[in-house]
Length: 390
Image 1: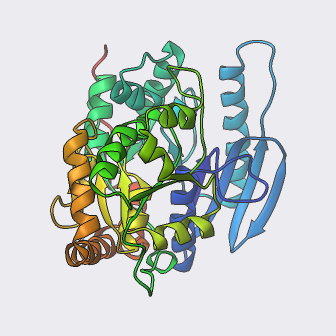
Image 2 (image 1 turned 180 degrees about the vertical axis):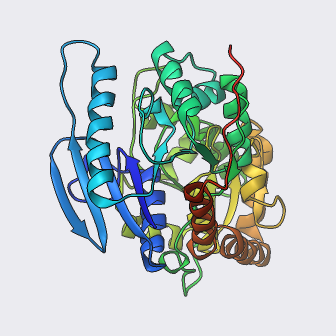
């Protein structure tokens, strides 16, 4: 069996960028190779044209092309031809593509196409109450209609996406996964007053809510410290730095207890998680967040949001607490409870890692993917149904 992943990102030195999508693909690709499955990574929208082989995985970097008009269509047709050549020359059995901006819209491929729903632009616009560009919605819907089979990383994402596009498509839920070996619990106890947020500094991740929450925490626990680790971005509404917006909302005392350590590589992020007593991830918009899984795998008690996908990852009161991020007082109360009750924090941390091992470890999830791919390739998985038109 030979599986190819079509993606704009992957953790590779030659790739233009990589985030959660790239990491999740890397986890699965390496796990599939370990199981004897051939894997190719087809990277589109790249700055360079390059073919290489690393870790028994074949990489095809496809350079972004420039067109005077209708580039959105012509580049997709260019990709269709390039993918067809790669498929033919390497006997690839199946291609998996992301749902974001519908890169496979207008494409006709000779092998089964699977789209994995990590969250379309339409999905995140709906969760954030933002207006979506018409063309992005059109591309994403067309790509969904053309796919032979569909996966969703969470049932909430699947249901919400079908509702948004007014489609009647079946899908199978297979979550993102992480390598348990890469996220082990720390040997020593963490700083009991250290609160960590890690990830992109952006409104949809609930970052701005943390200012009011931390103000409340500091009023009751003077020694508490809040650490931010991640890339700062320009706020979509205010058009200024999200970090600066956050700082403006802090009280004088809270500002003294806040530290921004910047955007860190993976190794340094793990060190920050190790040092944290409580991890706070109050996101408003996710499909199935890798940050939650990483912190849980490291036996950290979390206070997360309680929205949509949350119950599929967290068990409120067992692996940590799930709280509405806009309920600042209750959110702060749960953080303080974990800061002051070491036994509870440790108990929840252990329960969190146990849940990740059982449901989200790469060792478990890779078997689900292999079974799914085999059914699609053999034609035994029939997920195509008639869609309802808007």
